Image (tube, rainbow over all chains, first blue to last red; front, side, top):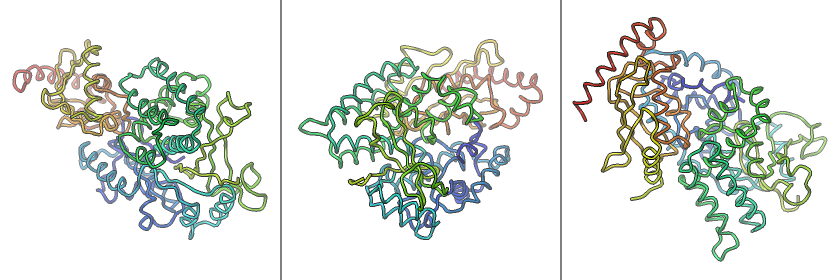
Length: 372
Length: 156
């Protein structure tokens, strides 16, 4: 994953700034994007992936995928350049304030071009992105179309996994009006409160966010339930959406912290710069805009006891692997993240209702076909 | 006017008062909760011992999703502090997380004083001396400490 290589070392973010000015900053960040075949940037404004910041932070240039761009070769090139920039201490380096201003302007530009959570679109919209792209992708999309009917994009600001997950989950609850599942998850969140405090988080940090989610969930089954349009409005509102993402990050982090023994082999094996699980939590989970990896997904599914299916759309040709699809065509791999307690369970809870489409560096929501 | 960020800042303030961290203090301006003044005391048994360093914290309506702008008002000599008082600290930039409150921010800055990160120099002379001539570095820091007592009277 490119973001790991490109992330500036802890504490060195300022020097990873590219001193070439706004245009080149943006350009270099674009180039650092993970390869994601797509039509050219200009044509598809609505699919521009945001810089990591819709929230908060000053990110180092090249820290994360910025936008769809078919230039794979630049990824490598840029990853190699960044270490040089890191050691660059020329006097021309801008101040933190200038960087903040720069980041803000990029963030605003991107915010205008893509909502946190987009509209539900037919899967044909996905095909259109790859019209002039790789045949592998087109084949895989054909395979995908056998099982899925629609897609909903999320903003590519590093929080896309959390945002896609919670939207898909709540949308399913709203649509199915499943009070049993609602009660389960509300209880689960209530139980998290003392656990979050035990994990060292101040109540003031998360209580608003928890209330926000619970209010929406609790409205189900009442005379005035949250309906889909209201859910869309709420999750597109920066105040609500960011709080909710933060809350999920805390749950994920606390889950990791409470099960260090289970998670540490994964983390220590995959992240060279993380000497401990706690370091990983602080570096890659708690800050807004840090992308999610398998570790995050496993922790969150466990924390909320909600299974997730991730469908992978990439260049690989792995027809032999398990997945949706047929032997001859390009198989589309998927992986189900099922909490341990549900792994041997049968029944509706063990079947993932949240389906996410993963393309390197980004998650969107997928909608299974009714017949599938 | 009560917005989520203002509400949160009130709670940050409450926590700072009810559970005050050692060696730091801060409060919002009486007429503007988005603008805070703070003091960090130099940690004991370090060259910074005895210093009273003043800072300002400027919050936006995006707090806590966005870090405040934190600046030293006292003159500083430190590898990660710019001449204008700006601070190069990961949690104030790309490692910011809404889990940090004012108390955590100030405590982090306090520990940065004695534990600079020479890899991201904001003051190249301080970084150089820190690496090459610690004795001279410590002497400069002591000067800064004494200076910090002076501006106590001037602009408070």
